[in-house]
Length: 259
Picture 1 (cartoon, one colour):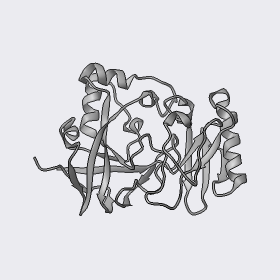
Picture 2: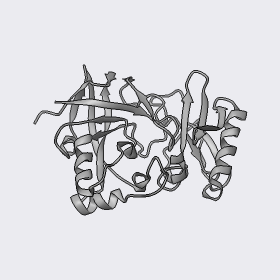
Picture 3: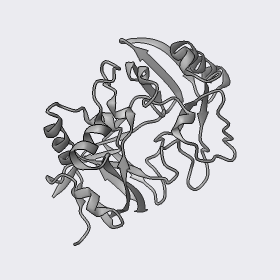
Picture 4: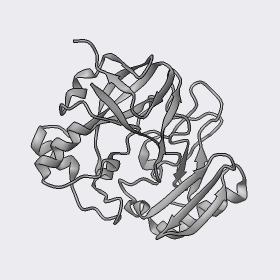
């Protein structure tokens, strides 16, 4: 039997996670506010009224902008403020529902990342209403990402070093006790907690973002290469889509698909 160890959402693509003790899930949607905002390059064309999926290269991201890892961000949902800190000190703050607030955040990233940004950065938000609401995920489908901690431990064993699970920026961390068991779930439905049903759609192929140390903001590992060399693939975790909604809680049981 496996249980949910941690739940996270990432309000701003590429910035800090927000831990959750529970979350309400709806069919065909992501965790509310997960990747709801992104900082786009000035050259990126995005229409919030008619949002379309864009590849992650159109936005600031850890895979290319490792200095993002040196920042700590908090999104204050009630006031719609984004607070950014570095080395324990506030370096930017702005209300994302107001032009002047977004401008303050954009100006910070323009100065902080300088030549890494193509044009003047733009703080963008996906469509608030709609079914499903737009999010800035790495994939077009509206999914949750899950990590089996047992698979991560197997990678640690091979690499002979501890690996921060947050390098993988998953929504849900759980532990089946068997590495790579989750890959067998792809194409099947399974239950989380009391009545939430999801379908595993695909394995998650890992990129250079996982190489970034989230404490030092340095690239100190090559996780995709190590996965490929040790296991013949560069995958860690699975994407799932919500089929039947409800509330999931930290500590809830994950029931594997019937075999």
